Image (tube, rainbow, N blue to C red; front, side, top):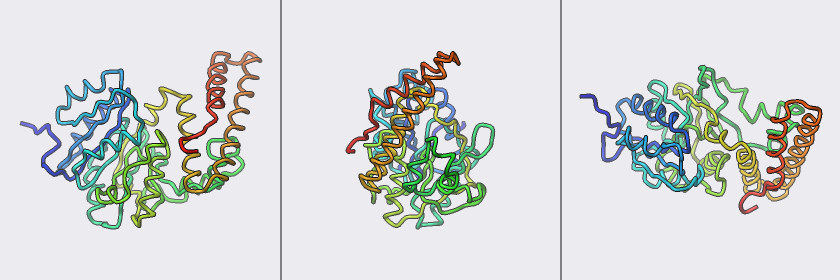
Length: 319
């Protein structure tokens, strides 16, 4: 009989933590890929559900009884959800995995093997793939003040070199390389490294938490590596696209928290002014197009979203 339980040892090699919110079908595909791709590893899977209303917890419990399910009544956010899972993890290595991902081939054994043979590496990310097989941009350098000012604003077109450096576009997609940080959609860390620096900063809620965590790993002396021999499909943003306005707010609040934490109050306030000005300009531009009769329902939707962003003030916790 086929062994349907990916957990083969009381002390697993790998603990996989998946924080999920209203993505039942994607979560099912993710868990199926984990079961198929574990190879010879002893694996435990911990799903932290943040109050999903689409039947995700029941599906996970019914179809994947080997999963350890932490069903929360509310959406606690990505950092806190991961911290809840990490607290229950027993593996030598901990993989933070988004529910909108699918393991390709032997990616899990390849990632674990790399950490086993490189004891100075604290964090590792695979090549993330779009569903069509093309490579996603998944490794980064630490953002500078210039990055904070131009990323996701109209200023980006005026300074393409800033974002080229930030996105590490000078590094080949198919070569292993040391980087500053990797995307949290699939991030493997050593248990000892995670224990040394502590959990994710829960004040982020969503976005930039993996940037912060990797920075703390590097500050503690660990290497961060991009390892494209391991590949994982990533269906980008399937949770966050359910709440577009909240996504705008959380993304920019997270950016501001990071810059306040690592670059100081002046840098964060400067970026905040630029971001608010950017959203004010977008609101006016969308409103003008709506007045001229161009796709009025879409323009109204965008104006409402940008107005809510402006009303939030983009003030992160502890700002």
